[in-house]
Length: 209
Image (cartoon, rainbow, N blue to C red):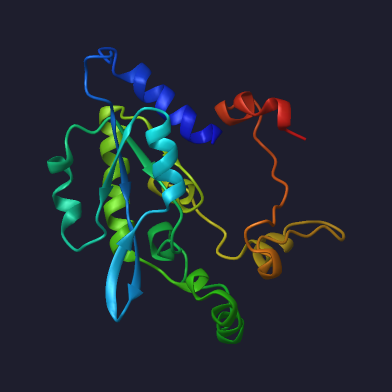
């Protein structure tokens, strides 16, 4: 809940003219794609939509369809952008090979959670253009899960494609990181370290252990 509140706070601060008699700010969210009854269906998690409304903004869903990345100005006015979870980002966008996992490892993951091996190039294209728009026009934005990854890539960063496998090669001793626990998919967490003197470290310093 806290990250959504932070996004809306900055949006309201960003549009100085925001008052009771002015329409609420519009927050764009790019949809995800799934298949239902042999047809493609776009969707956004209800949790994100509920929180945006709860904090006084209007969620505007950007459909994940071919060509919409060239029509983003049609969604004006854009007061904020929320980048949410989704499929993996195309490794070629950050100069990496297709996968660091063997074909056998990929098949094992597909059996447990197929979405963890998928790539959505169309969503990549839409969100990268949205991020560029945000940076050029100083529009508030927030990345959650995949959203933070695509923000990193848009700014020239790289990613670990498999945290457990790649990061373990850089850790010392018996240190290890389990990024996903398929027996407790939604409840599993792993520790992180926030870089000092950054906004995240300042906002969450009381819970930074």
